[in-house]
Image (tube, rainbow, N blue to C red; front, side, top):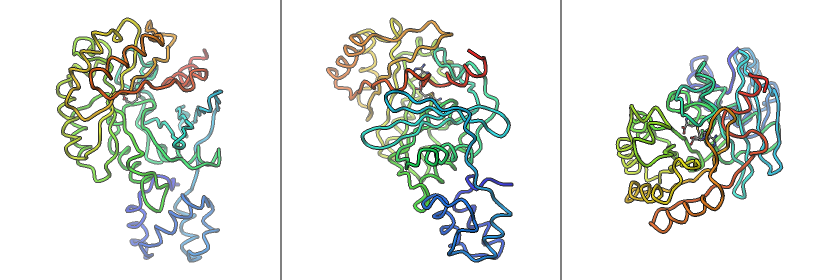
Length: 342
Ligand code: SAH
């Protein structure tokens, strides 16, 4: 039976009209499920008995099966969900002063092969379906009895390698009678698949774009991120400028600080020169060490210096605080450990 979380509002409307019901019924049902958190069609009291019965034959409303939950001392919660085919995916809940945010996984495994990232240790098995994306949010909301205000598509996988489902997912969670997650509160992070950045710029829902940059020149970025050989830095930045022109949304550049690799003062200068003139800010991320890799985290002093150097050079930058490092919160770590019994 089809999972209700797979349906955008237009698809539900079309389905209902085709079956002889009214399009506005779709909004009523959406409100029951996403606002009222009523999961039994029988209890949807403003809907006709016939439609309630049909709905229960067509759809099921089902959250993801929780395999395990790890709670960090800082309030970060990491879920390992088991999908119907047995695949395991990770979803992270973070509590911030501005609200509750969820980091969503977009694929089972990842093919991008970034040399520092635990996600790539397991190759992509498949893309996630729309309902598997949406129900990462609803499962966390319903498990904790909270409302999610912010969503980042920054978990395992490359969202632009599962473009269509990720866009439908955004339409579902953004809808006014649904989860109502504002477009300014939704961020998609990509390793830099250039043609998809242009496509993303044309979407009607204008969400935030984050680019995993991690290096200021092609030579180093080629080593860290194989995708750079297909789409080098200058093409990524050109696409980012276009994205800003089309949407007015400031670009976020993510930059993991790797000890002795990309964290020198000269590299901070190089990064500043590269980004000068682009409407953006840099998110400096402390590296979450992965057992299988040689990379080390930049120490706090050096990270502060790198940050200060960017600011001196006129680049907006923040040094992100570490969250959940005591619970394998680096992408893909929990799942990899489970599957390899580490
Ligand atoms: N494929 C997308 C989204 C998933 S990765 C992308 O590349 O943006 C989300 C972010 O986490 C990326 O910036 C990625 O480079 C970063 N990341 C991966 N492994 C990490 C680790 N061990 N510690 C800190 N950040 C990591």
